[in-house]
Structures are given as structure tokens and as C-alpha cells.
Amino acid sequence: MIQSGSHPASVRLVADGGADAASIDSNVLRLLLERTPAPRDEVRLLESWGPYPIQPVVVRTDLDPALKVALRKSLIGTEDDPLTRLELEAFGLRRFAEVGEEDYDAGRLPQPLPGR
Image 1 (tube, rainbow, N blue to C red):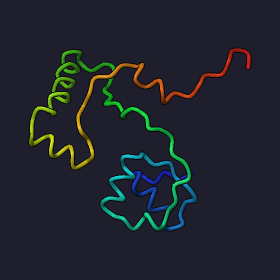
Image 2: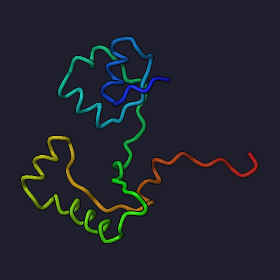
Image 3: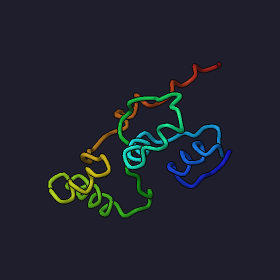
């Protein structure tokens, strides 16, 4: 295993023959291929899982609860600001949304049956 330092660096390692395969976030790969189409001819997609719900925004568990609420409101409020919305859209991000654990159930691997 090689730690490349980033998803784009992993794609470059595969394209250059420095690695046989890499697991890449689909959003990163999409943006990379939009900006630098060359890897499209140098790598091949073997498998794709999903689509799955969006990646979560995470914070430290010991972060002040009031700051957590303020951050959540600020992120969700970005949808209301046209300039911020344009900046986010440049990265393929449409908006932030509040979700619960159940929203990620589709992406979870089935748990083995007890005793197996």
C-alpha cells in the first residue's frame, strides 16, 4: 500500500504506473477529469459503488455545542447567498442539507449474522 497524500495524486500514481489501483472519491475524480482530461485515457474505472448519499461534514465531539449549531446554520445558509452558491457550484456542490443516520443506511455493508 502507498499513501499518495491525495486522491488526485493517487490517480497520477496509477496513470504513471507507480500503483496498480487506487480507491478515489467519485466527486474528486469527476472534478479532476473536468479540469485535466488526460487521466481519462490513462486509467480505467473498474468498479463504482453507489450512488450514495453525500459525504458528511464532521467536527470534534468536544466542540462547543453552540458552535456546532452555529456552523450547521452557517453551512445550510450558504444556499441563500448567491455569491457563495456560485463558489460552491464550481466544486459541484449544490447545497448543504441536514441528514440523519438513516440517510446513510444505503451505503452500509450488511452486518454478518450472529454466530457466522
